[in-house]
Image 1 (cartoon, helix red, strand yellow):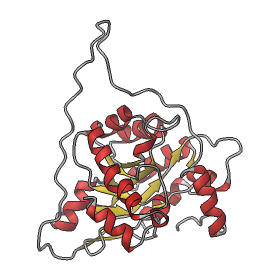
Image 2: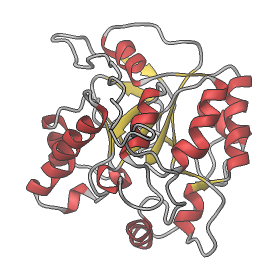
Image 3: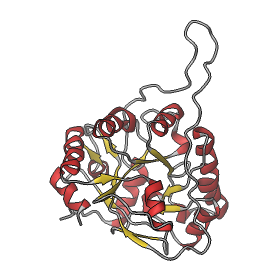
Image 4: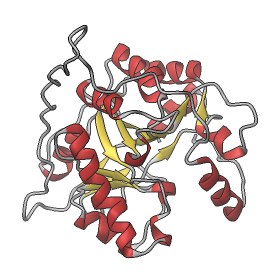
Length: 288
């Protein structure tokens, strides 16, 4: 059964979230900028951008729904001393994360990519048995130091939703580390430029946080980006319209559910994995 979230009044939760980002302070980055030629003083030629499929819905595609549980993580790190209630909930211990990923594998779940979800929804392709989509929000350095090694060892994939304005902030991924995730076969999606509640800012700023952020991420990766996650899960009709105009095909909320549909591609549900969720609880969520 899904674990219950901490009971925090909405206003207090929003204040804590704004103060903590989507998880609070972080470790210092472990490098990952551009590489240089050793001893030559010249910049080495960067690797070719990853080739990604074009995820644009074909005209006249029928409405189709598939069941894919989308699990949402934020931080995988030891809990910071003095962490508030929200940060505590969003921070999963590294050992628990390892055990949870292993438990999913043992239970027969198969992680899927955004391309596989798109193909299942718009092209009717079959998904593997017991599919699960792993997502990680906010772009903390944990993504490359703790999460990626586990996924590679277990031969799994995930989608990392990054905040494009934080590439130079301590504790967050650098542009080079974002590219490393991408070239390791992970999906990288957009999570706005500065992690603001899009329902509370003027339309011009919403455009910058969606279309502007998408352009920045595409420059970083060297290929199109089609997926988006709403900060705090907050969205309304105007925000959804801006996300559509920005060119995103699929957008994810924090609403609970496991049904993904072409009838609502910009309000896909997800399942929150908090600190209190055990490995067995993660398997239960994936099977819910």
